[in-house]
Image (tube, rainbow, N blue to C red; front, side, top):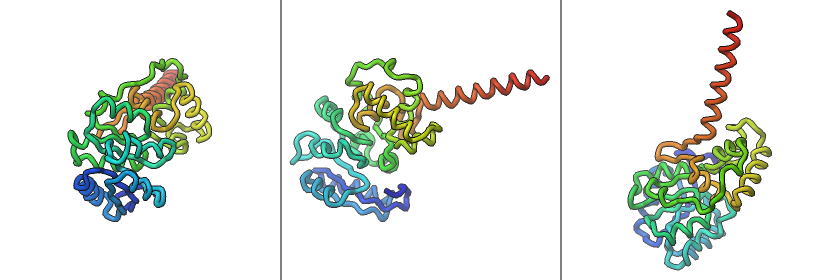
Length: 246
């Protein structure tokens, strides 16, 4: 997939049972990517059939589709890399239980935030970066009682980088280690935390504070602390060297 920019022409599938709302989303997308190819569906079966024949660059869907059972329309993509943005205002416990079992990259509250922040969500999700509306965060509580002591200090730093959905290559550039090493850490982290796919890893990192998401930016507290500690350590060495030269 090409690097997304405002000149990017992505293929996008929208699945919303409310056709008018789906068309509103389409118009907002064209404000971001005027050349985007966008297909709007109301039927989950029609949308999934189209995606199977013509894989898109982004899938935007609601939480409830009339001809689907629960989040059945998202289940085929649990092990895929297709960027998924869910646009919904549903905040019932059943919906959140279902969301914990599927993979997604963004969760936008269409009622509380409206479509004003959709461009921000689109750009983050198509980059495979996590976006979660503030109104949903209190509902995304950890579902496993696993102590963070299970992870080594290095694994915690790696989690703070890959927890936003970064690939091994992307994370390796920021961490300064080989992609293969990142992948080894990823597998070890997921095994220790009993996570099975990237969406669960991203949600866990968000829930535990390894990644903080706002409408303007993504923050990596663990990774940023490491960088600061490294800078402080280098400053300390320099100060000692300067003092020794006096």
